[in-house]
Length: 500
Image (cartoon, rainbow, N blue to C red; front, side, top):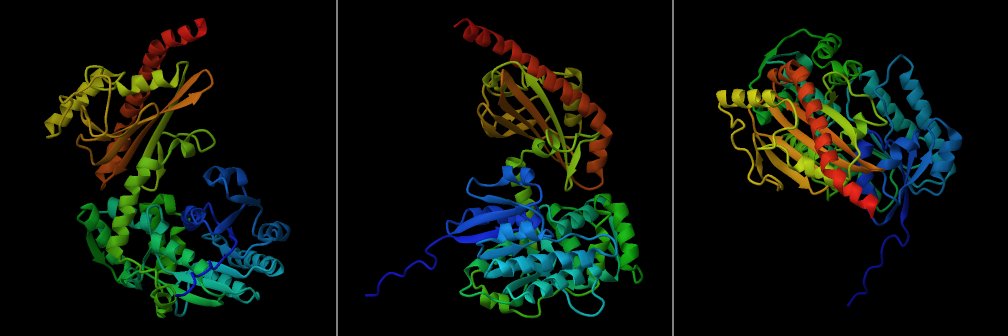
């Protein structure tokens, strides 16, 4: 009989994560926090922005990757450091600036005795690499030359809810019925799901010894960018015609992309220029070195991204970004990827339980607390186009449960006293939710109302913006009506407590 194996690490490994507020770093952060054998520290230029996202056990090291003193403080005692800092640089000097930052990080890591650096770079080969991709690879070379063992994982297009590549694919397919596909859309690439990128980054912690090498990572399928457009269109049920053209340079393509997807106009050029070279895995060592990671294919990656967006509706507090401390609400709401979000907030001088009781009575005989004629008109129009209209009402006038019908909505989630989320079942060119949250405050409560819309095709955004003036009136009247009802029902209880 053999003795039980002793744990490989008697003490938690001290890990520094840079780029925790970025796309990949933000996905890696909670996974590292869940590992019992990791003592995590995050480098942050703005600690006040990162702190609310962190577990109580995660430390913050204030500073910037270009500040040697801050880097030495952050890297002191660290075993493994993740270098996930990268920007879609602007201007002729961005590559030199990125290399200087990498040099400062590597020198501080060497001085502090860091055992392993893990860096996520860009996959690509051949002559004429784009400045963006060449810069990413130069950063990896600078880190590996530092004397600190550096594992550079080189990835192609990353697919995930909220990733740049996925959002551009979505914007193109959603908004353009006939897609002009220049030659670069036929260049081969090997996309990888964000979950698989995170799995590789996490598996790097468990290598038996530090390594100083480049490992290429990719998904299970080799496809073209045109194939990505077709697969996304298939999964969301849109018919799109792809018309190949022989002459459309990456620069001209980026200008066209800026017109179609204006939210990405500053960085679309870097992405398009990077697509002129194949980004395919040529060395399969990743599958041997990390046998526990088996990346999924393109169809599964896109399906997973769409599914996780639905989960994001359930767990995301949109007003954290739109309300206090974030950018102000603008006409038409705000965009999160393709999602359109309109958030309103009102304070009520009533207990939170009274506020939620008013919310829970919404619909049916009670109505929608404001603009009743417009609600009746919307119901009639829905019936006219084959929808359910307003005639279903609700089963219980006082209480709601998940799955209950409320006129042409259905209760998707309810947390008594705190949250009610309704999913729309009326006919709309997309998917819609209406969410209410109650937050306790000194002397009363805050009511937060969030309208969320996922547009589909060209009709989706047209529907949202054309009806926004009416929606703004209806939503504002509804919130004021709920607040007034909450204050009426909460007044006796408040008076009773005061008398006691």
